Structures are given as structure tokens and as C-alpha cells.
Amino acid sequence: MEISRIRNFSIIAHIDHGKTTLSDRLLHRTGTIATRDQQAQLLDSMDLERERGITIKAHPVTMLYTAKNGIEYELNLIDTPGHVDFAYEVSRSLSACEGALLIIDAAQGVEAQTVANVHLAMKQNLTIIPVINKIDLPHADVAQTKAQLEEILAIPGDTAILASAKEGIGIEDILEAIVERVPAPKATGERSLQALGFDSYFDMYKGVVTHVRVFNGELRAGMMVKLLHSGKSVEIKEVGSFNPKPYVRDCLTVGETGYVTANIKSPKDVKMGDTLTDSRIPSPALPGFQEIHPMVFSGIYPINTADYEHLKVNLGKLQLNDSAFVYQSESSVALGFGFRCGFLGLLHLEIVQERLRREYDMDIIATYPSVIYRVHMTDGTMKEVDNPAFMPEVNYISKIEEPMVKAFVICPNENIGDMLALISEKRGIVDNTETLDQRRVMLTSRMPLNEILIDFHDRIKSITRGFGSMDYEHDGHRESDMVKLDVLVNAEPVDAFSCIVHRDKAEQRGRALASKLKEVIPKQQYAVAIQAAIGGKFIARETVTAMRKDVTAKCYGGDISRKRKLLEKQKEGKKRMKAFGTVQIPQEAFIEVLKA
Image (cartoon, helix red, strand yellow):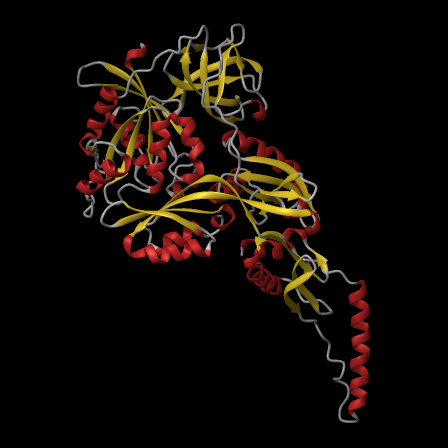
């Protein structure tokens, strides 16, 4: 199709503002899917996405739409995730577009992630079309939402389209606005092909399938192309587009999105955000490629050690589909061989584990999540530590810096006191408070990444009864009094339970771990001590009592000294047993503690 009739746009929104429902409506209205094939959340192909009602992967789809002026246009839509953990997925999708539909829930208004996604779109100079969705809800407040658009995002409120994706209101206006407002793509003017690979997945029969957007030249089967960041040259076997299922085309020209398959067998050869160019006359790389840096680390181990190789292969396939996920092999005394994995955040960690269990049928166990600490040594060197096992001895450390984040929390006015208390409990400092409208405020605070990992998001939701939202960005490092907390069972340290915590919270954490372990470690023939220690100082202790045979049962009456003699004899035996005995900690105990 000629370039003036192509429109590339993506849909951005806060999580749960109705963008997937809207994309379903657009597909139905343009006749891309027949009514009999229609189903809710059509583009969310993963069971996990449907269950949780969230989008995890960006989904491209090509639609043909005949506008009111009688001209047929090719609309390329990329539906993007809304959660903060998948921001890189959003930024890559936006770099393949010229425009973005910004969806705002009329009942919820502008939220933290809406603001973050709008900034991403503005950075890429995209045309933003605001859409106020869910206007059919009884508590929808359109005037208020328009006012927020102007105040918070500096987007004129009268440019917003009123719609209800569920009821099918305003769908025609949205399609017309895309045709009128989104600019047609332009060729970059380089001498040969330039295409952006913004996503990929692994197909059993075709190998690696890469989603592309062509910026210059054209892509067709039989061409030799070069992947600039990995430096590999490959021959293209097939090109096509999605409607939403893949279908083969002769070629992809400037401005079109679709997929290519080539003789790429290994997932490692394709980097997301990479540029494809003609291998004979290469063009320079497109901007926007960045190596993604994980924020959260956790060890993933197979429950059955024989599954190690199987897990390794599956992690490779998963990494292809999720470029923000990284892994490397490691081993642990307690858990055997496994992998140290890096994630963008806690939801990302949870999703990856769940996908390994479901899509690849793996039985896995994950260790406690941690972040990367910068450890400055006394000899002037600096070491990055993401695993407590590699923490140097205390006498070699001059200072430890922990990663910080700038957190933006939007909450109702009445919850501001509780939110401030939560932020200070998490060792955060509120920099400023901004009133968004009569009902809500935005708190900007700087806090340690380590503190927001586990339950911060859940606590915000429970304090604000679901009305609060949060977004964060990386914000350098800060020197902190961090210590390594060791857990010893029967005087033997267990590396799977050790973690790096702030000194003020170490005792509370140590007590919690010790009491949890007391519940899950089975009784032995002798008493087992569970201790939490910082360096050589014990800060918590629990004892698993011994299983005891009543040796005095055969003594009826008689002198007390006979009973005492038998008890002393038993005590000696226990002492000897303890000297030789080792405590086998069952796998279930690890799983229980790591869950807690």
C-alpha cells in the first residue's frame, strides 16, 4: 500500500483502563476479525494475561479501514502493557509508531502510569490522541478527567474523544481521528533497508520469528539482511503481517509492520530493538536500542536436579520472548545447580516464574529477591553484589551503596497520612506533594529499591482501598548501613536463607526467619538450634525440641537417683549423636520459607 495511506499507532494507558477491550472493538469494527471469532481480550493470547486481566506482551496487528472520505487505509496497531515493570516493552513499541492513543478511565482519572507512558510518547515525538474511556459507568466524571488532562499532562481537554469500548461508543470517531491526526510514515532517506525489530518469539517449526517495522527500503523473502547489534547476516525465508493470526505477504514496504522469519536458530542472535539492514549495502542503526538493565535478582532452581538442562533450554526460549529477562548459571550448597535471574520488578519475576510453570511445565523454586549493591572495599576497588553469598567479609568493606528509586504515588486526599507513614517505614523521604485535583495528591519520594520489592504495591492498594497507584524510575545510589544476615541451622550456615538487609530491620527479619524455620524443620533425635547472625553476633534464636523417648517409664516408685541416672545416660547419648549428626532440611522447608 502507498505510504500516504499507512498509519502506525499504539495504545498506551495505566493498567486496567480498558485498552485491550478497545483494541478488540477496533479489530471488530474494521472487519479484521469476524463476529463469530470475537472474544474478550483477543490480543492477550496468554492464559496468564486473560486470568489477571493485564497485558504482558505487546501485540501487533494490521487492520484495513475505509474512512468516511472513501479511501482505504492500512492501520498498524501495537497494543502495549500498562504495568510499570513492562515499560521497556512500551518504549520499544512506541519507537515503531508515529502516533499513540492515550486511554484514560473516566471513573479513575489520570494515574501514575498514565503520566509515565505519556512522557515516553512525548520523548519519541508521537502525536497523542486522548481517549476518555468507560463513559457509560454511573460514576464516570468526564469534566474532571478533561481538567486532569490539561493540568497534569498539558493536553487540551477538548481534543479528547469520549468512548466506551464495552458498549462500542465512539469507536468510529477514534478510527477517523487516527486517519486525520496521526502523520503518515516517512522514509529515512538512507541508501538501503532499515527495519526495527521490536519483538520476537520462538516457533517450533520456523525458529525465531521477529516482529519488525520498516523505516526505509523493503523486506522480501530471499534477501540477505544483517542484524547490526549482533553482527549476524541471515537470509529471510518469509515475511508477513498479523490479523491477529500471522499471514504471509510478498513484501513489507516503508511504514508497514509485520514479521520476518530467517534461518536464525538460536534465541541469543536476536536482540530486541535491533536494526535489520541490507548486508551488501548496510545502513546505520536506528535510534532507540538500549541494553536493558534488570533491577531485581532471584535464583531459580529446578526442584528435581535432573531437570537442570531442560530448565536451561526453556529459559533461552523465554528470554527470546521477553528481552528484559536475563539469566546466568550458579550453584548453591542447599539447592544444587540453578540460575541467577534478573528481572525488571516483582510482577515481572512473578510472571516469568508462572510462565515457566505453565508454558514449559517446570517445577521450580525461587530464592528471596535481591537488588545489586555497590560494595566499596578498603583497598579502593568497587564490587557489585547481587547475591548475598558473594558479600565480602566485613573487615574488607569501607561502605555499601544501595540502589534508589524515585517513586510517584498518587492517592486520595484522606489517605495522605497513612501513605506518609508507609513511605517513612520503608526508609523513604518525601520530596514534594502536589495536589492534582480536589480528591487526589501526588507524592514524589526517594526510597531504596530494596524496600519496594516485596509488598509496597500491595500495601498502597490496601491503604487506599484500590484507588492509589504508583510508578517508579531508577535514581542513582545512596550509602546505607547494609549487613549480611546469615541463618545457621545446627551451627551450619545455610546459604539459601541469607540475605542483605538494613541494620535497623535485621533483627525483625532474623526473628521472622527463625520462627518460620522452627515450624518447617522436622524434629530430630536431639535439639536443633536455629540462629540468625550478623557477622559473629547472634540476633535471634529458636530451638527445634528433640524427639524424646521416655526412658524412666520402667521405673515405678523407688529412689529418684535411679531415674536421674537413666536421664543422664540418655543425655550423654544425645550429645554424642549431636556431634556426628547433620540436619537434613527438606525441600518443602525451603519453599515454605521463601514463600513467607
